Length: 397
Image (tube, rainbow, N blue to C red):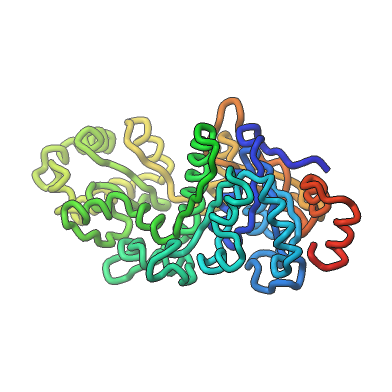
């Protein structure tokens, strides 16, 4: 079958995906959706029971979500023959993505120096929990642990009740940061003709996601604290109860505050000394919340969302996940796409949120079967039919 091409933007590039679990496949999914020829390299069934937490459910949403638009070949990297095949694939690739521990790369001969000797244009893209060197370099990394060590858990939840974020922030952000690094390395290669080693860690990515909270500590000594659904530097901003549910509002700055008060028909709040400035509103947050919720209690959420937005004040309902995908704006944006799995079922995917006018990303194929494209990838790499048969007989593919 022809290669899967979901878009045109990255069509010239071939990517070898040796990554597992979450962060690496998230990175590679971006490349695949924008048209890169992604070859997911997996061990033959039964070789590595710990290969991937999702492989036993290939038709499930998790595996499909991470591995759409990719081809799959099996390769036993625990054999010299398998490593020899991989080196031939490296010779014709643009990018190799992996998340082995640093010491494993060196032992396998897949560190950057070794790959560069095979292909000077190769970009090695590595993900780790804690970085490629340093005292924690060989520790295993997991999103839950990294949220705690990166500071996110300390500012999430309510005072005295730290809570992890409900999604894998460290994994997802690291995958996106690594994709950004790959794009930069590919652009630079156009000028220099040389590949390079690109690496990102869950810990550094999580710290980068702390952004303002980290910057305020580093430059002002302000230690951020959890504040529940409130905002640390603005008020009123957060979740407020209305007659039939809750809505989020974002009233930051004097202009928004004035429009908010006028929309709620309480212009006296504008000059009330308890609420007249941002600092005063933060200091008197409890009293202000009580006043606002007394007004909101008179009408349903939809009324206030519509009224505030018409006044130019940011406001939105609190959605469950099913409600998210029922929203007319979400449907209009094309936030989902469908593809047929190898068993004939329909799988729905979240599309890329970055829209390119001429060369958009797309979902063209569901996740492949294990080893579905092994023979064709080997042929493309120059292997003869008798060589492919021998590799199969040896259990290499």
